[in-house]
Image 1 (tube, one colour):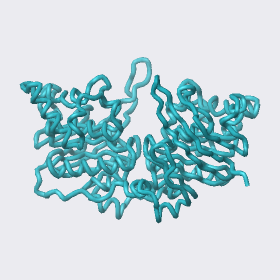
Image 2 (image 1 turned 30 degrees about the vertical axis):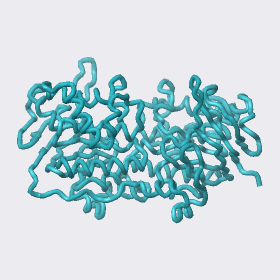
Image 3 (image 1 turned 180 degrees about the vertical axis):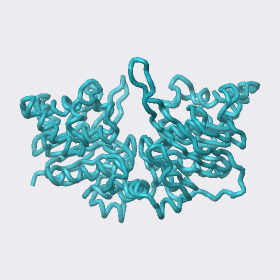
Image 4 (image 1 turned 45 degrees about the horizontal axis):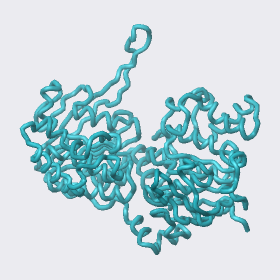
Amino acid sequence: MTSLIDIQDLRVSFRSGETVTEAVKGVSLHIEKGETVALVGESGSGKSVTALSILKLLPYPQAFHPGGKILFSGEDLMQAGEADLQEVRGNRISMIFQEPMTSLNPLHTIERQVGEMLIRHKNMKPEAARTRVLELLEKVGIQNAAERLGAYPHQLSGGQRQRVMIAMALANEPDLLIADEPTTALDVTVQAQILELLQKLQREMGMALLLITHDLGIVRKMAGRVYVMTKGEVVESGKTAEIFSAPAHAYTRHLLASEPKGRPGPYPESAPQIMETENLKVWFPIKKGFLRKTVGHIKAVDGVSLALREGETLGIVGESGSGKTTLGLALMRLLSSEGDIHFDTRNIQGLSAKEMRPLRRNMQVVFQDPYGSLSPRLSISQVIEEGLLVQQRGLSYDERREIVSEVLREVGLDPQVQDRYPHEFSGGQRQRVAIARALVLSPRFLMLDEPTSALDMSVQAQIVELLRDLQERRKLAYLFISHDLKVVRALAHNVLVMKDGKVVEAGSADTIFDAPKTDYTKALMAAAFDLEAAGNKAVRQ
């Protein structure tokens, strides 16, 4: 029997000047009709390049294929002309990309973008296309679909944008759907909903699904078979249950062991209090009319109280828009707020920017995206020493360089790299640099805003280990903001669960994770640990 997709000895190389880089080295895989196959591996393993090769969406001529066949229903797509490929793309084979915001056209309405697929491949008239678009949006779970037809991508949430991408991909009922990290940028609850939706639609349409991911929990739940990739090669393949129970290759065993594990070390209850606030509010005014009259408020943070001691990690969890980051920025006095904020027993709420400056050395931030938070024009040494130039002006060049070297060693990087630039490092290394920058002034308090969400699982585990080690040695207090509950469990002593700006549940990490009380927290836990979508209205759709 002919497989739906049969990739034989696929090779992909990239040309840059005189340099040729091999990205995919002889990959072979097959997918049968109606089955789900997962392609797993860390960033740079060649997963996405393999998938993009199926539809020939690579940047040719820089990319080229030294060898290989891609047989789709017995026809070699490698030999197909552009016109034949156009008939296949979006019609018989569709693709969902990782980041829906960059995949959707910001200038076109949802109706136009989904309808385009139908008009092109089915020659539908605009009226018939509109009816079909509405049907598709309802099918993928967009609420009030008729009202959303005229919306633009920026007017939708991340989960809604991903649902629109799925609607576009499924518009022509393809034989094969390629899903490239379809849930990476989403909340755990939305992630569970999207996966459930994909499974449901797959059953209804009888289509095959190629799932590209680095999340092994998703693979275990979704895929019948799995291919494990590293450095451009498939190192292991087989039935998912067998691969998970008895991995044969060392790399597969490494991946399976890479989830963040363990618990944070204890901190003394007599430890001094670092941060405290009571009834903190951040309200943003809603202004309308010619005179911009305030007609209401967005209550981003609405009466939050917390206390944080030396050596303690307080985890802040909740969906996107729950107020987690706004709370952190308000505590750092980077946003205006109401309510007392005590840092190291001092009320810092009324202090001016000038009065806050000496305190900044004791309170630092590590952001979500290390690439976005590091200046591409500055070397690693210049990035890290910025704080020293402001806070410790008397230091000489050699003294600053020695401090930078020491802090790089502390985060597990070779001091010899300090003259290199951010783009020369991997995601995990860049995050270590961001942590080094925060540590260089020997702070007492660190706000960590989703510091692991953009990283591979194994790198996540390394960063968690590093943060625990640094906390133990330096007695740091962490405010750890994340929607990844597995990472929070590995790091946090206590947890606040936020929804719509309010704390809906608070307590020790063990209590929150093992015996959640509210429906909302239960839904978060089910989505994070069991990938189960909430059947109630506790979470966002």
